[in-house]
Amino acid sequence: MEPEKSKILIIGVTGRLGFELAKVSLNSLHPTFGLVRDSAFSDPHKSQKLHFLSGAGVTLIKGSLQDQDILIEALEQVDVVICAVSSKQVLEQKLLVSAIKRAGCIKRFLPSEFGSDPDRTRISDLDHNFYSRKSEIRRLIEAEGIPYTYVCCNFFTSFFLPSLVQPGRKTPPRDEVSIFGDGTAKGVFVKENDAAAFAINTVDDLRTLNKVVHLRPPGNVYSMNELVDIWEGKMGKTLKRNYITEDELLKKIRDLLFLNRGSPGNNLSTPLWGREMPYPENMELVFIYSAFVKGDQTYFSIDSSGDLEGTQLYPQITYTTISEFLDALL
Image (cartoon, rainbow, N blue to C red):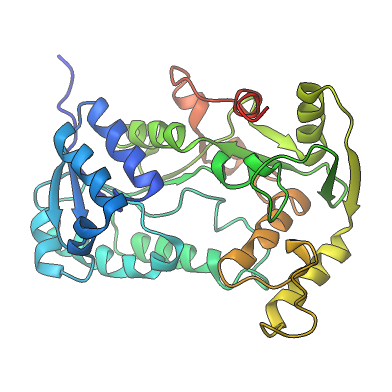
């Protein structure tokens, strides 16, 4: 007889990842709950998602991380909490950690990470404390003795892959392409629904308790040079490759940190990677620098660090490869 499935509370079910997490949770037969702000029901796009989830079997609870009484009531109904709030709300998880501690019934907490490992990135002087905030939440979880699993998916395919890592573009280049650094550092891409599948599989897995789970799916770990090779092969055409050196990229990133909007240097006729964008849009170059110049997603060995790799844990999960994703862009 199979053990009873954990009851899962997902915070952020109207977001792109949160919605996928809720669907996978239901499909995996977990009793699934969603904490939803009251304002979400009046948002046409979000309300459509909520209508679908409710009809599929998700129990929706009106509340927020600030509604501590309602939050405690929600926590007392579940075994596992998965937070998928946006990066701007990361520190609001302090309220959630406090509530989890008070409730005393949560067997596993997956905080809002699902990107590069914040403890391994090496760009702290450039990233507006983007990663240090996530590390701060990790340390709080550990200090409070809350059982956890940290899931590091690296890049979602929807973020950079549609443009072939070309800031400001929404489609892949067909004539020339910018390559940052020497083009050899490897990044990792995972489709949101695949990331959700791996994350949901961890919640009742004792192997992942108090562990970091990285996703490096075979067929989804490539350098920029390799990505361009794949795309050229699919198009049957060679692109002109323009290499942006590390020093040039760093200068552009630092210029963006200090430029005043509307200044003469902020010329809208220049490529997006050469002009200022508001936070977090101006983080695109920082993420590119981290992954494809510094190699922050792949420079370390997962096994030797004591962490785990998702596709090794769950070889039964079928996922979309980069090649398959790019096929749809032809």
